Image (cartoon, rainbow, N blue to C red):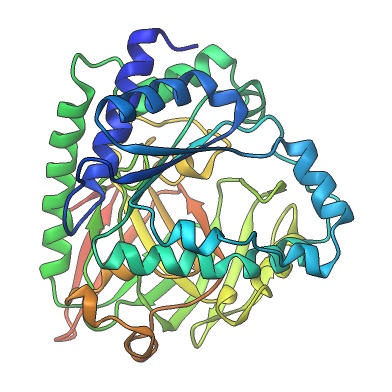
Length: 400
């Protein structure tokens, strides 16, 4: 899998990413960091845990329940159990300074026979936890990052051997570089330049055209584009949270997706007046529709993103949204997320962005955030506020 040297490099990258993701303020000695991990990622978890202790963080370690436990929960839990939050959980989350999450699934379709309404009810119940962390992030008190650790299940679903899959992870995260952190700093600097260029353009709308879709989003007022910055390893995407209220056209995800223990393929969404009014898929269409019915905001857009093929080394389907939303390949990728917006794409002071202002500016609110990825050859055209048009992305890269 990974050598001890690679594991240490991975740990160093994740701790750098956690710090880089803290857009306001910095970490101090004895700040609290939650290390949340799947069992199969134990070798990486140990490396991260050890390094965090060496650097004088207080570490809260949580092991995710194995998939068969999760399946039993959703099979047997009644409505009260689905909505249960342990006593003290909100207090714990309200005092966290950081989160590092390690994703290493042993089964990607374990919930395929579970009623999606049960999954939705549990997600809605946990929304207050996420809201606490969102507020702390806006105040510069909290940051997070997450990563992937190869498993046989991930490799099988991606159509790769475990060795091939691990090699893709190592390449994507620069674990074969002499100094991966230095490499990440350089790549982040380059994509940040593109993010600043996009943010400076007086964009009104962005239209994406491919063989299978014609889709347009309204950027909205007081928006900025964010590039990389630590949240997620790897992260090459440049993204924003548009004004959901004038999303229109057809969006098509040609890359398959594993979500909440379910598999979907070929998702096609038709938007009118900001909402997905039709939803279909080649596989998993019923699951898609039920996810979009989770709450009022689930059928509305929360994110728009582009990845430049010149930066991402990912050129294979990875059966993990974290990697797939950073796909490089021949034509890069565009992805949207249905569901919640990212508050840090607000260009003004984060302290001003309360619930009322979010609603006024068209930032979406939902318990869902689901990235849907398109890797087709695409042209992205910006319509500027003066009515002129400018191609900002084509043939897999930005025109910057």
